[in-house]
Image 1: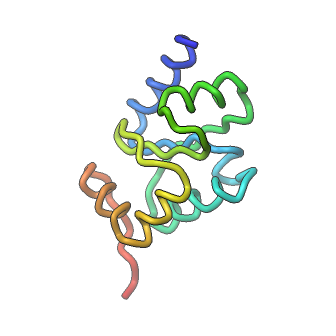
Image 2 (image 1 turned 90 degrees about the vertical axis):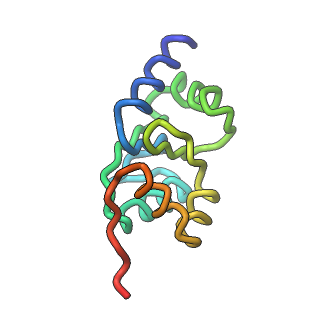
Length: 112
């Protein structure tokens, strides 16, 4: 498991925003992954989507890495943010936008 931990650690630390998900950003394979992709798209932020369905070791390894049992999992600047429910709640409260901005990443402002 140490090899997969190193792979995950590298992805989390070398990408500003990374989403470990089922499927790809263009073709999410579960509704929860799709919701997070939609939120990130709405915010206009670039992110790397990593399909855990391609690698069973990665799928289990990310759960151990974050100590979080479900997917998707969102990381911003190396920090675990949460899964779909947490991301959705943060987004609705404006906290996700603030968190991403605080990390130095530009976010598309909502049209008022």
